[in-house]
Each structure stands twice: as C-alpha cells, then as structure tokens.
Image 1 (cartoon, rainbow, N blue to C red):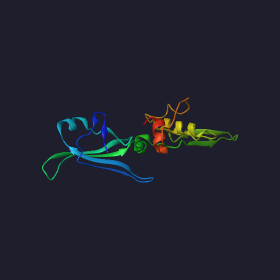
Image 2 (cartoon, rainbow, N blue to C red; image 1 turned 135 degrees about the vertical axis):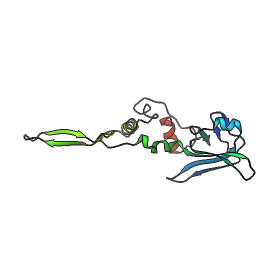
Image 3 (cartoon, helix red, strand yellow; image 1 turned 60 degrees about the vertical axis):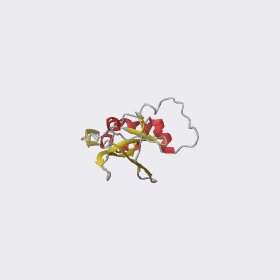
Image 4 (tube, helix red, strand yellow; image 1 turned 60 degrees about the horizontal axis):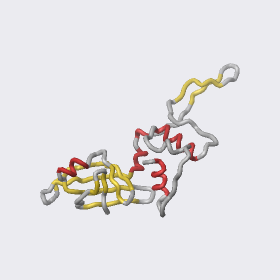
Length: 167
C-alpha cells in the first residue's frame, strides 16, 4: 500500500495500518525512518493519499525505536473529518420576538446563529447553505452550479461526494 505525499511516495515505510469501520473511524497510521528528507517533508499540515483516499495528519511524533533509530510516527484522519472541526460548527438561527399591543410580531434579537431554517429547498440548496454557513473552504462553489460529473468504475458514495465537494 503506497503512501503518497505532496512530495511523492513515502519510502521506506516501517509499518502502516489503514482502519475503516462502517459509520466510524477511517484512519491511517504509519511509521517511517526520521531521515532529514522525510522530516523536512512530513509536517502537521501534510495530506497523504492511500488507495485514492486522502488523509490529514492528526498527530506527528518523533520517537526512537528499540534499535535506537529515530522514526516518525504519523497518525492521520480521513479528510472528511475536517467537517467535524469546531471551526465549521453550525448553529441554528433563532429569533426572539415580542408582540406589540396591536398584535404585530416584532423581532427583538437573535441568537447569532449562522444557519436559518429552509423550507421547500432542494437537497443541493441545503447542502450549499450548510457549507456556506460553516465557512468551509471547499464545496460551496459546486452546489447550484452547472457541472459535469461522472463516476469511473465503482466508487463509494462517500468518495463521490468528497470529489464533488473538492475536498
């Protein structure tokens, strides 16, 4: 299983493990010698590709193994976990109102939420609004636009959506 970074294939790899569970974790862990070259290339903001799937570095550790050789231990999460980051949280917009003496409803404030309720919207419109509200740096431009999109071979639904969002 080759592990590919922006600089090419990570070589050599001492050990690697790819874990995927249904509706659960999708992670990549690997260990490689801490050569000057690899130490200069593998950083906390690195992304790696394995089997066509992208993974972000979550934890990077410099360690010494039992043979007194320094290694890099790299723990990665699938890029779809980016949407779980607190910076992309969505809060429902709620207004506070009062009724005046004539029975008119007056908006007196709101909770500062970033997502207003949507009624009668398409799934694409809702997805676009969610991504926009989250301020996510990917995906918003694909929804509501005329696109050409095809699937070559058999791919998971998750993989197709990630491609569509440009993640």
